[in-house]
Image (cartoon, rainbow, N blue to C red; front, top):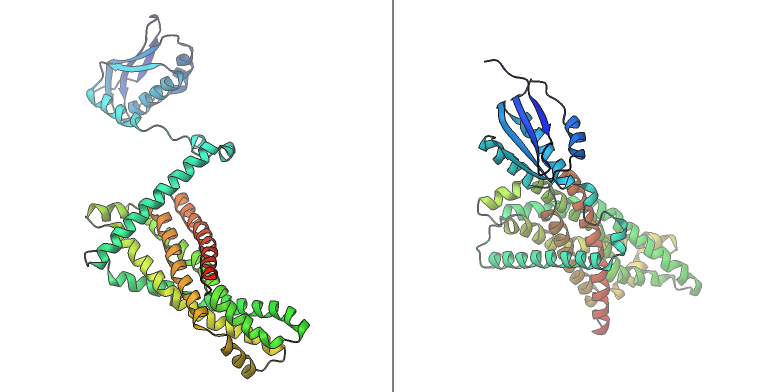
Length: 376
């Protein structure tokens, strides 16, 4: 069968409508006129409607659909009505599907303009959207935890054990380094002032109380936010990109129960243990500095024992549980709500760390105020 070369002819004699006559075989391998030649003519027509007539159309495939979609988009941009006649029904259906989703315009993305950040209405919309998403996530998490309590959740103990190992023993190296250094910094800061009064021995009290109540748990939480919180966001974001979460939902399994709950429980369980470990190493780091000031290890230990109190220890452990929950929630929420691209996964990891750090600072200040009012 002889193939006819594809072509088109724009007829603009009628003021009410312009007619685009399509002829020949619009298939792969046949050379056809470029859309740019038609685009210039479309910009010059004064008719309010363009009618595509396929009466002389032969064979066709995706080449024709790509050409028609360009025509449709150009007419839409110019405010010209677009319609077709004498074309196969499949052409109408495919064009309808292709034109249902609007073309992505990066310049039109919400918040893309710097002026939006000085627009109170825009900021309120952003705040409202973030609040609604957070409340929805917390509500789903509460439901999942309640189902876990009554034994009806899809949470697996093997996943919980794996995430405990990931958040606990795997973090020992970085926690060890930061804790020792923080203890040494506390001791140096205290030594500068205490040496003026000849009270260097009280460096032990400063380091012990500072590590138990504040610095041990806070520095551990910051490290875990950058390490584990970002990892949770990246893992869940990658699963969202690969449509694994959609597959889990299709199988009737709750992603909140299967993916989020074991991660949150693992971090909440491991944070108090990591905090105790960080406290111990911080006190050891302070002892290293105290040794350089002429304080013997026995003197440092004896003075430090007097500063250890149950209320100081409990304050740090309570903070560790709260911080672990906040870090896990921030990481899992960012990952679950991530977009479906590599850039979105990176953005989710960044958002998880920033959000977690903000949560930690606010929660730490609030807890300190509460304990001060309770005289703890």
